[in-house]
Image (cartoon, rainbow, N blue to C red; front, side, top):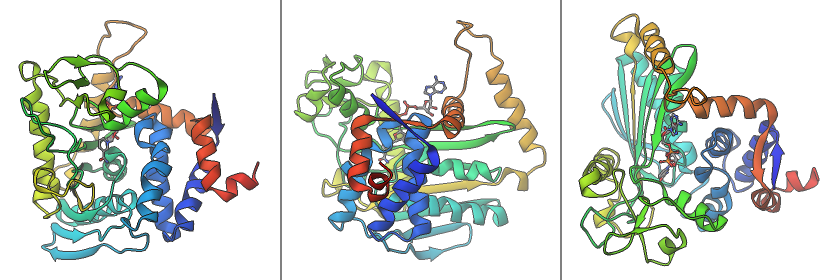
Length: 349
Ligand SMILES: NC(=O)c1ccc[n+]([C@@H]2O[C@H](COP(=O)([O-])OP(=O)(O)OC[C@H]3O[C@@H](n4cnc5c(N)ncnc54)[C@H](O)[C@@H]3O)[C@@H](O)[C@H]2O)c1
């Protein structure tokens, strides 16, 4: 069963929940947008489900500081290093992109290299802020010292699921937003399947001998590990693992955040890279060319006429457009969780 909640209601409810924990209202609003982005676009592994499982416990245990301000520790103009000082990552990653975009608007490129962050949610939400200004945005985040995935052929986990996102305007169309974990799926999708009692496809999980595991509950029992994009070495696992390490380098090694392989095992002191390029400062005609590029992708002949070819970001853009108008489906158990922490929603009945 699902409850369909008007998007403005969902947003104001979550904003209120964060504000009640001491997050200043304007930041609570951005954090709520970042969280609700998951349910709005259909990326439910990183939406409301994480409110009571991740973000409220972070605030309640003091691992996130609701009122912290980002401190700039080095400023070279186009390149800034900053410490998020345990502010809510849902907000501070957006702030990092906005600062990078402001620098890019002046200098053509802006890089904000952030340490001390907490979990940022959907990396694509943050990257897409650059596309709103006609710019190209890249966001990468490691998982602090947390170790989830093993190197191909390894027996010990070393890295997190290290998300990577790139957003680019696409003319009149929904922006291109590639937004992905560098493991084949994030842990949230494995746990969602376990909660629903649904088997996962072969290729997500493997046991110690490398055999595919389709029972998602085996992951939290420690009987299966998460694979990198590409799956096995012979099907490209080193590309996924390499992308995971690429994120670790760009997002965490550069700013001096916690590193999975040598960190303390917790997802604290997360590192984030926000890179924004302003192509219109380099040449004219970028916007028109981008429109033509993505229109050509949408125009590609489809193998199945009922399933037109799309590009990353397009399905999420369509879903969000529909749900902004008609409401966001929220599973009943999640709605009950939200009501339990949101007095405003309880009062509304
Ligand atoms: N903060 C963290 O620590 C963390 C860690 C891992 C993942 N995440 C987030 O988890 C979310 C989900 O990641 P995921 O790897 O499960 O993503 P996914 O597999 O759902 O999608 C990956 C990409 O493929 C595209 N795509 C999928 N189906 C498509 C289709 N039919 N047509 C066109 N494009 C399509 C999507 O637009 C997306 O860009 C992301 O928002 C990611 O940032 C966050």
